[in-house]
Amino acid sequence: MEWITAMTNHTTVPLALGVLAMAAALAAQSGPSGPADEASAEQLTRMAARFAPVDITADVSGLPASERQVLGKLVQASRLMDALFLRQVWAGNEALLLRLLRDETPVGRARLRYFLINKGPWSRLDQDEPFVPGVGAKPDGANFYPAGATREEVETWIATLPPDERRQATGFFTTIRRVPGGAARPFVVVPYSLEYQGELAQAAGLLREAAALTGEPTLRRYLETRAAAFISNDYYESDVAWMELDAAIEPTIGPYEVYEDEWFNYKASFESFITVRDRAETEKLAKFSAELQDIENHLPIAPELRNPRIGALAPIRVVNEVFVAGDANRGVQTAAFNLPNDERVIREKGSKRVMLKNVQEAKFNLVLVPISKVALAAADQERVSFDAFFTHILMHELMHGLGPHDLTIGGRTTTVRQELKEAYSAIEEAKADVSGLWALQYLVDGGKLPPELQETMYTTFLASSFRSIRFGVNAAHGRGMAIQINTLLDAGAVRVAPDGTFSVDDSKIRGAVGGLTRELMTLQAEGNYAKARSLIDGRGTIRPEVQKVLDRLGGVPVDIEPRFPIAEQLEAEIGQP
Ligand code: ZN
Image (cartoon, rainbow, N blue to C red; front, top):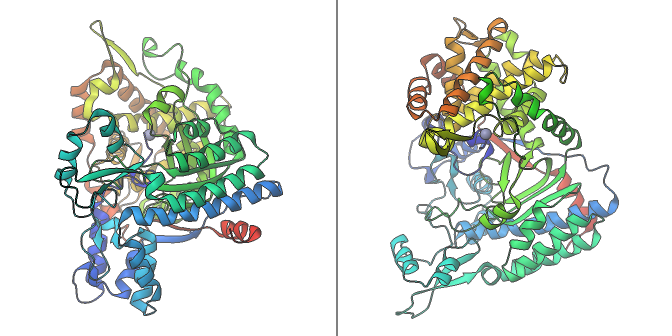
């Protein structure tokens, strides 16, 4: 349910043909072409320039001195997550980093900078191509599995284990290592608390110091239980405490996402998001939540398809980053995430969505605005705003909860997801987008939102559609966005000028948005797989006029390279650990 995979979820950056083409073009421009591991300083600088450097700042002025100290301690603990993540990616990473740090030649500096962006010597935007001489292919199993072992060996060994040990071997918080001379039993399961004992003991100490400083009980509880988890390797209680966090400071620190383990997606990578709550957006969210039943009651679908009692929503937090580290700070930056991943916690406590507003804003300024200058007609460029962008993202998330979900087809109980199968994600993402626009217009019409919003939200959405499609239509978001833009083109609600720029037709956009909302939700209510499939095949494509815009986006950054001046300041205030 991510908004736009490539930009919001650091997981599967679908490797966009556009990006690859750009890398190839860059390589071609800078002299003799060769493998990327012989990239020149200039080539590396250009590869890195796809990430626009930006200061990520948050307002911490309202925090009491004690909470500022808490943030400082959490930043220090986060630096340990950086070190652990480096080691998790590749056993050779730390030694290579030391070598790069000593290389003061221009190409050495360029390698170091790009290494730090990627957290390793492989370019994550270019299908993990190595860019440091002598480095081989990126290990798919990262450093979670025994050195020299194959995926098949590990898989075969896991299959021989009794259920309890198998659970350990396939768990989030263990590595698998070789037993020296262990012919009968080649491998052993090692808990993170042992594998990373030194750093985790240090991190636990810092979290406890932070816990002792804070005046916020739910924060203290998360920090204490997370510190205990680092030592015991049992994360359950701290995941529950994280779900119950209700404080000005909202940290997420520890082993979480499993994408770096490309063998099995079993093993969690260390990361840290140190954030503070955004008060204004949190209030906006509460206001929207209060309107949801009314929105459902007026959805532009047959009345019998509306849900008379919508269910409880998963909690959403809007926060601003103070510092991020480890898996949370490599390659394309995360702009929102859902956690925890532990099924047991999800069953008992649900999961929480955290939206990183200042990251979204940086991406808006450095990526979306430049895209709008290429994609939109001059008059429409003036009607692109961050407020419209972010308000629509909030509504997108809420609209996932509205419309048809549980179905009864011929007496059989089922769900939209089951019926639409592999077509579900693209349809559901398109639904959340377009019905989000419809809902915002409904609230404007009802006087619940300022009328200025309708002046910017459609054009902002149009610009952002190019940002999504830029990463290809293989991912749900890109395909869902292609469906929308093509439908709006067909309806005449979006027009293309002879110079190739796009604009919104104000007289037609509302009708077209309502029409597509009705089409998608009705298809979902019917559980109509055939219709979903033909919609995706017919309208989920990149048309030539859209491709022409994408072809002109080569100079626009792909993402941001964040810097955290406030974190450095807070760290300096408390001194060395
Ligand atoms: Zn979504």
